[in-house]
Image (cartoon, rainbow, N blue to C red; front, side):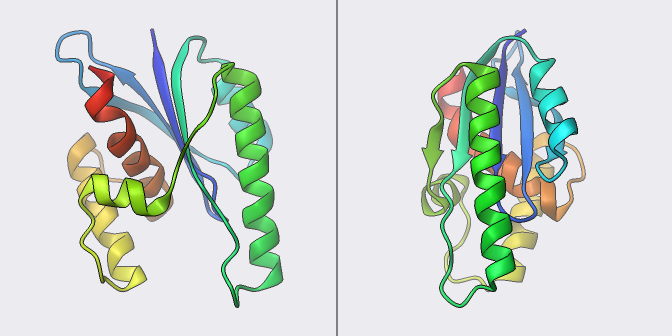
Length: 151
């Protein structure tokens, strides 16, 4: 089986693991995992075997953001990127937040909390599973990046 992995490496980030339907070619969400538990994260990626593509959101510090949050975000981004490259053997496809949100159809100008809920609701609808806020960005990144080219 071939897998596709997408990653939101933020302070409360996650990975989403997809496989491709042999019938329709559509992406099917297999599972999600938080990036803040290194042992679990490594174990789940390592067990997959064949990974076709890996996409990760480009991350950067935000002016005025607390130092602790910036550190956690930077640590998660580096750890996630290194782990995914080593275990998948693939080059990461870095996707800016603006690019995947545009591809996913996120309306511009929404306040952050409203935007997060919109993404959660649309991603949940797309995969047929109720997602949490921490899962939804990783799922949306995968759907926006892989859906058009997975077939």
